Amino acid sequence: MRLQLLSKVVGRLCRRPARGVSVCAMACCGALICLTGCGHHQTSSGVHASGEAASLPQVNSMNWANPILGEVQEALPQAQASVPFRLTAIPSLPSPRRIFVTPGRSRSMTVVVLQYMTAQGLVNEYEELPELTQSQFHHMIRYWVALNGKPGTKGTSTAVTVDGKYAALVTTDASGSTSDIRWVEAGVEYKIRGPSLTERYCVLMADRLASAVTLAH
Image 1 (cartoon, one colour):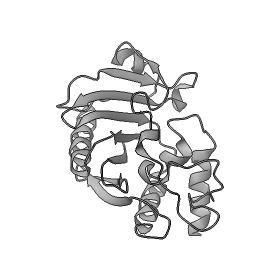
Image 2 (cartoon, helix red, strand yellow):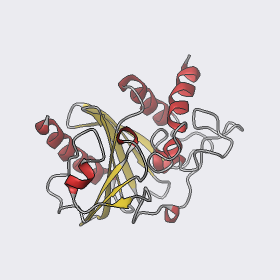
Image 3 (cartoon, one colour):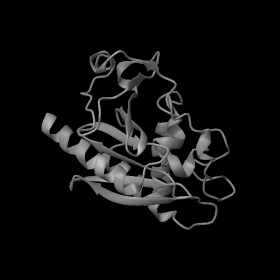
């Protein structure tokens, strides 16, 4: 039953390869642990057919400057017109210096990235409609946390709670130099990433964003 659910979850994510940054690898599996994702003979649970967990690529393979190869938007209202949910910037950070939208997609398939420059360096905030139910998302978190320390797994996954309410997954690369966080709230999946973010800073920004989303609704 567990493998059947994982097959269903990842299968749903992989059917739309152009949504986000390698949706099969990132939206499901935890970006810093399984960016090798689609097309590398993995099973639908994100594990290689040999039984080894997906390996972590070098961080410099990530296009941090434009992670979704998106179109630059003039301002938040322009990006807002591209999605069916309300966009929310991270409070206490400077206004986004750039805003990206995945090109050529329907509103329900569009991913928006708000990009900031902070004391922790570059920060990318992703917003999109989730492809997992809450139950499936919680199962995904448990699955990736259980892979910690397993042969072939590089990096770590940590289950945390955002704003005291929302289950979230933090992934940290093998060197410990960068972490990201993702969670689902108010019908939107949020993700915060950056080349030099610490786990603590990820959770801090996620708490602030989650509180702002709650107030907006």
